[in-house]
Length: 182
Image 1 (cartoon, rainbow, N blue to C red):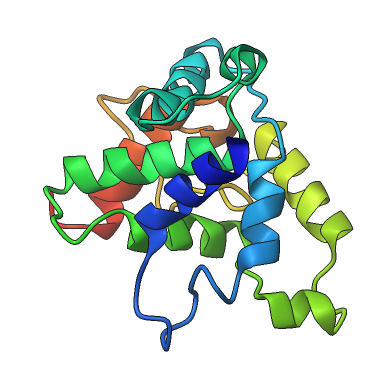
Image 2: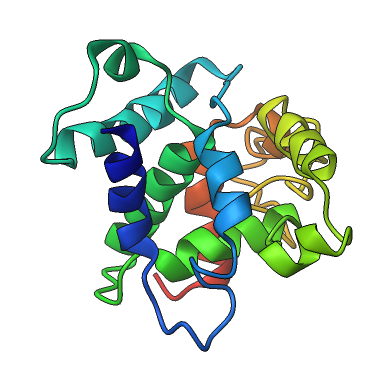
């Protein structure tokens, strides 16, 4: 049952197999993201966990009760954020481009070839995910999924000056405002 659910999640990333990244070329990384539990320290990021778990409700098949109670996986959370980005941008092309963009921002958009050749390692991915979920990135979000070139000031307030203290929702909003026409 869980294998079918995993394939359901991957179906949202379907794209041209000749274009990298693709599901078929990044299966190891995607499997790892699916088996890594999302952890959060900013209380409002609980909403991102809930967005991730929402994929379980979208799935039409049955899942074991114990699975339904688990926290969201990193894969589910990133898909949830990609879905929110596509919605905010009114993008009808799907969520794949935003998902891969967040992996690029983390610096872990590795293919199976890179894992097989030792260019990428599970330990490297684990460390990067830990750094992101522990909010060990800089004030501009570099090292996270939503890095900024400039941190805006609002009426002299420094409320948004430190990205690693800002909930993911607001990080996403600032990132979209800086990188897309919204």
